[in-house]
Length: 447
Image (cartoon, rainbow, N blue to C red; front, side, top):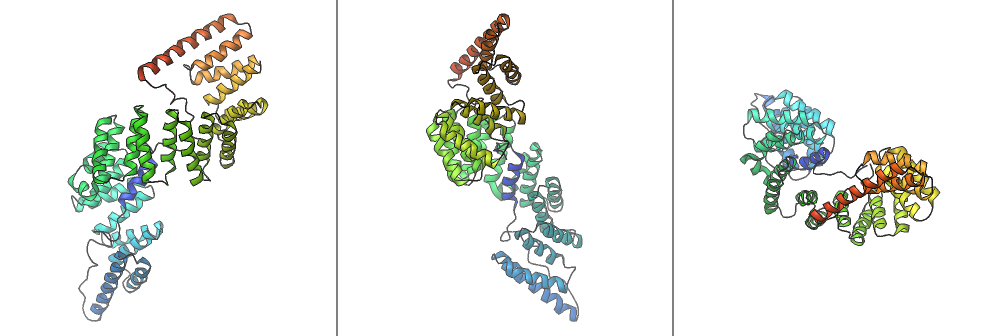
């Protein structure tokens, strides 16, 4: 479990894309074909049977468009019993099964429809949507490409192929499709959102923001866009603006934990620990089984010096996700600050066992050992932390103390010089940017 940067996460992109990819039964091209099921010419007694099958499918499609899939399914199965080779019936049953969440069965029906009628456009389009939804993006792209080969400029296939190529990180091709009139006619806000993501990936922040503003002009309540804008502002260390857009994302979609985590995190960067604690506390109440939510309550409480509350929240996080190096490291620090050094040492060592390169676990354990006058042990741990983050002034200061106590004057002086150097550099960066570089020091979510 981790809280990911969703504007950079392939899985997250897939989820957002597929919400747009779904072909609803009520829209054009959503059923088994682009029009009502075809009536095939027949002679004699077979003519009446064919007409009855066609009537069943027409009625089933009407019911499906009315949201009555449960009533439509028996009619489609009756049609298939009468005509097992009817491509329209297979395609329509695929839509019904897809809506019921039976992806494997729906795929079988779509493929049967395509096998019986290789030109079945809607069946191939719906098959592509299903494949994309289950993470088979390359196969989905091939399905959409096959539709466009037969029907160039097909709006849904153009739009869906653009989203699939975006997920496949074929950004130049995706941008060409998503900026086309066909894709914009299908869903311009979603197209603009992804075009913005493509620009952001390329480091063109201004162009990305322009696309996102165009999306918001068409869809005011668009939490994914608000979140993307907030992420861009956060990368630019424009934390006030980022907080505003994170808040809009939370308001637009309260069920997204990552929106709340990012909002609380940026509030911590602004040293608004009370407000951050409120955000994380609300998140933990909404997501009581989320280790990450309780973890962030813990670090916000730590930030405001409420170690009792921090300890309780971090212990709850570890109950939900045992062995998290981040939670163990944070709890080790808190327990140490509460005067329980032996327990703190155990926790910090456990964190390092889980992740030997965990800087905070190494730094806090080294500091704890220095405080306990175990200088040789401290040096070994602190040198490991320095290999992870060589320009951190605090770790060099702790090494200076340990070396001084061990009588290693030359090495102690060298560490003191490094401490002064890195401390001055940090102060200079703070002065130049107007904001202390505390983002690097903000603990990361449990992994």
